Length: 70
Image (cartoon, rainbow, N blue to C red; front, top):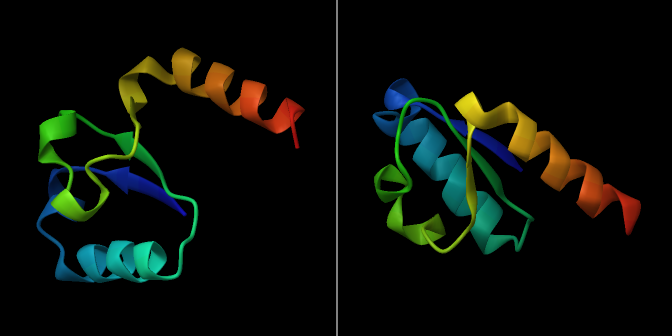
């Protein structure tokens, strides 16, 4: 599950429900932060690595590295 976490999604109960469902189902969760810091992530997924959407270059490098091993 790819979560683009912004100030709007931070306030959304629906987004929090979707995150909880993905977590319960054991889905892989990737978090992209849009103008938020890692401390703004809901506690249920706070241990997951979050990528700053404004640092897209680093995120794309991580995706490329991970997909090479698949």
